[in-house]
Length: 177
Image (tube, rainbow, N blue to C red; front, side):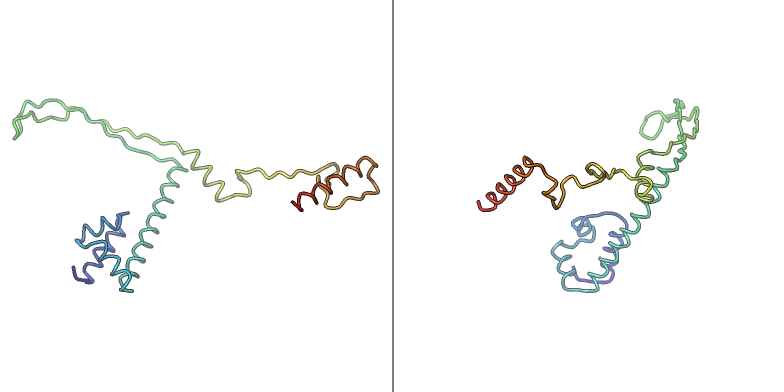
């Protein structure tokens, strides 16, 4: 098929409308995927139109997700309609009985706020107050480091000095190997 503004509009409208794959879009506008990718590679106007349409779809999707999240956080009402049918005694075109509405009831149901959605919003909108993680710091006696960077050997006993010397020798031997 020959490139035209009309076909570009059809393609971009499909991209904006739904999350169709490139293969589905190409089938709907009757072009090959190869043709689509060649146009995108060789025609900057086409590539920009596709990029813009994808951006529009992403913005719409984000807006819908936000609206849905707000509903899940606040809760919402749903109207349910139940219809009871009975036989009317009349026959339809196919020779089957035509049903008649005997009773119809409408009920409004309240859907409670969703706890997981509330937690999601709180942890993302106010992370300082609603963290999911715990920061812990381990220190030694008196708030000192558990593993000191420097050791004052004058404060060590003879036994502690021997252990420290042995640890140092082992570390040096490990580096040599």
